[in-house]
Each structure stands twice: as structure tokens, then as C-alpha cells.
Image 1 (cartoon, protein in one colour):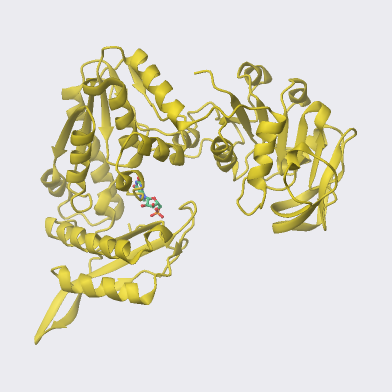
Image 2 (image 1 turned 90 degrees about the vertical axis):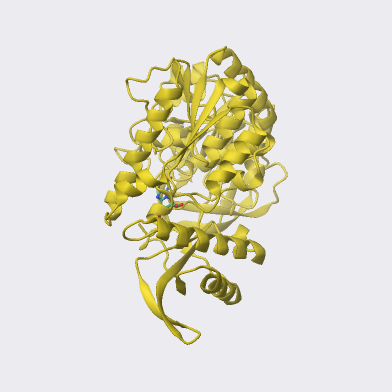
Length: 517
Ligand code: XMP
């Protein structure tokens, strides 16, 4: 696929994926690569532009990530952001010093000269800053194009050499004209065509998949999550019945979810769909087990056992496909971007698994390996996957297993499924669903005394968990209005058998996690 590409050089900043997503949103394909990528490799990729990210270091630290100034001789425009901006100043002979007063948060900047980068941006605007060093002298040939009250150079450039740099973070939405500034870099400076469109992606992927797969078979593990569902739909469009999807229903999904997944994929898409129902097998393994980690391990191990056994039956050479997406590759360090000091190599990812050695495949296919989550969702919608599935909330691999505290039994699963369905229905009806990033019911291993009519009851407690978050690393408990909570509580105690009390979890993360186990 010959599409234009911008490279994001990763210097360890926390917003690196966000920069790449913003560039993609602007219609230009981009990849994140380590700052240690050799110049020859960068040249071979023929980027239309290069963006230096932020990073936690000071350019004068001995261990801080650096790059050869030869990068400026490639004839490719460069935009430096935050640390990237200071690095450019340093490499080109300017001076970087510690700020007397660090700038953090929303800061006003004023433009101090004409710039292609600020085309359409007012003379004064708000940007997001986060730095303790600043450029005290711009390098020869450069001009400062904006300033803030405490920082004489909030941006600088050397247009003849195609070098631009901003001290602030245009990728963060708090920067009022950040999107415009990035677009200006991509279109005014790098002269990109904007050829990254989801329709084109689908078309070219389908073609590439057809030519790779030929008349062979493909098997895909379908979890019912967004990524594997979209991968399944894309492969179905490419090769139809040559695709077999294996869906393991361990009986720990939400109410009716297994049926919904089966119905969606058998009715809407051309493929072989194999469902393995194995709740009892899981319950047998989990009998008497109460330790959270042990439960997780058993569920995980049993899942892969059932899954590979089925794949072994279905596989007939050919290909093994999975719904790996771009952040999975970055996080597991398996993309091109792994490198010392970069934000890569953080964790191995559940979306990427290796088939056991006795199952032979020609190759593993990851049709969504270049996409971010929001791009995957856009592709999913274009392929006709139902809205509820495309916009599904995160759901843990061990399913309701981590939301039933203590021993997992069939009865407890049923109570939790019913409770969760009522909560979901009420939140949807109340119109606040979009404001919650994730919400669900939990069944703690607690019974409490209640009264119903003239009778004393001794039944289960249901806890409600609802959070808001940007990234799931931290989360706040959602301020659901009392009247909605009251309706939920009322319905749970009236409609769900064996529930006589409801509590609302008002703990943020940290110190709590989102899930209870
Ligand atoms: P925690 O509980 O770690 O959850 O604060 C953060 C996010 O991750 C989801 N989660 C999981 N997702 N497999 C997954 O695929 C898991 O084992 C798992 N555990 C937690 C959780 O639902 C939340 O969105």
C-alpha cells in the first residue's frame, strides 16, 4: 500500500500515541518509531514529515535521548514538540535553560511573527504547556513565532530548512488551536495529500488479504470484543467462507451476550461460525476457588485450552488471524518502534497470542495491526457491525469472573447477569450512558438482612461501579444523579431475585482498581 506517511519519533513522552492519533485523524497515516531508529531506515520509509515528541528529560542530561543533527539534512520537514522543541534548539546551537517558573497547564501565548504553522490561528490563544526547561536563545537562522508571559520562545522555526518547533502540546485538546497547528504542519509544510481514509483502508486491506490468503483457510478467535469482531468482519468481506471464527463462550459473559455475538456474525457476515459452550467445564474447574489471582489464572488457562483444542480441529494449514491493533503492537514492543528509552516495551498484550507449536499455520495475520482503537471502530461501522458491538465498553477477559467475589457458581452468575442487565437498561434509558466510560454490577460475597413484606430476608448485595476516565490508568467514580441511582436500586431489589440491598462504589483509581478483582 503506497500511502504517505509521517513518522512520530518517540522520545519517551506520555502523549506520543495521542500525537499519532491526531495526525491520523487529520487524514495522514503515521507511525511511531523509536528515536534510535537509524537514519537510513528513516530515509527508506520516505516520510513526508517527522515529528519529535515530548519526553521527561532535559536535553543536557547525560542519559537523555538524542538524535543526530543529520536528520535535518534529509530534506524532510520536522516538527518538534515540547522536549522535541528543546532538542531542536540544542542540536541547532541555541540555548536551553531551566525555567525560573515552570509552565504547567493552560497558558496564553501571543504570536510574534508570521508562520505557516499558525495559519488561521489568532494572535493570542490558549495552549497546553508542561515544561521546566525553556529555550533561552533561539539558534541562528531561527525566529521565535510566539511567546508566553514567562517563556520568550513558545515556538520557533527555520522555514527554509523545514524545521518547526513548539514548546506546547498541540495534540492535547486543551490547546485551543492545536488541531489547526498540526494540520498546518501536515498540509502547509509537509504538503501531504490526506490519503488516509477508512474507506480506502477497507478496500486496500480486502485486496491485500485476498492476495495473501489465496484459496487457503483462515481461523480467527472471536471474543465478541471490538477488535476481534472488526477483524472478523474485514476477513469475511475479503474471503467469506474461507474464514472460520471460533467463539468460546465460557458462560461468564453478560446476559444474552453470547447469543448476540452468534446472531450478529451468522446473520450479517459470510463465514463459518463455531461456538463452544463450556460454562460447566469452567464451573467445575473453579469450584471452591476464592483467590482472585487463582480464579483469573484458571479462567485464562481453561480458555486457551478449549480455544486451541477447537482451533486444532478447525485448522487446516492456512492462516491464523487475530485482532491485534496498533497500540497492542507498540505496547508489546513488537512494532518497529521498540527501542531503549522509548515508551515501547511496556507489556505483552492479550490481543497477541502465539499458537502452540503442534498447530501449523502458514502465517499469522493481523489485519488491524496498523489501526488505533477509534479507527478500528470507524472501520467496524463501515463494515456494518451493529453500533452496540462497535461501541462496546471494555470487558475483562475473565468476564464476570472478576465481578463475582469469592467462589463462582451458576446461581451467582445468573444473579449478576440479571442485575447487570437491569443496570444497563436503566442507565441507557436515563440518557447518561455516553458520560460513563464504563459501568457494571458487581456481586460481592456478602449477604445482608432485609425485610420484604412481613418476612425477614437474607440475600445478596449488589454493588454498582461506574467510572469516568481518559485512559483507565486513573479513573474517577461517576457522579450519577441520585434519582437515577434510586431507580436502579429500586429495580434491582424488585426485579432481580435474591438481591435485597444495593451500594454504590465511590472509590477512584487509585487507590482502587476499576474491577473488584
Ligand atoms: P483495572 O481493574 O485494572 O481495569 O483498573 C482497567 C480496565 O481494564 C479492564 N480489565 C481487563 N481487560 N482483561 C481485559 O481484557 C483483563 O483481565 C482485565 N482486567 C481488567 C477493566 O474492565 C477496565 O476497563
